[in-house]
Length: 124
Image (cartoon, rainbow, N blue to C red):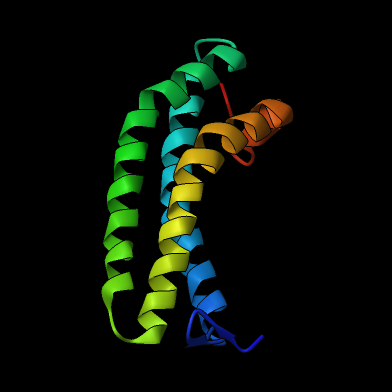
């Protein structure tokens, strides 16, 4: 299948560029969530720290993710196929990161790893 919806197959560089964009953009939000959990875990049990940390940062990250996804979705209107493909992939990736990875996977992995989730930092 070299053609889909009247367009040629995906450009070869798009997966690499999309991966780099999504990792770089998503990592900032991960740091924001984990730092909130880290601070709260110093004075409360980890389960409660995760609940409060995710709850505290959730609305800010959701708003930022929606705005960022909308910004990249504007590329869909471009007549250049490379920009259209990039816009679709990155916008969908940011939405997936905003509504699945950040509220579900990051807290779950943090709880599974326990204190090891904060490596290499030290908790006093």
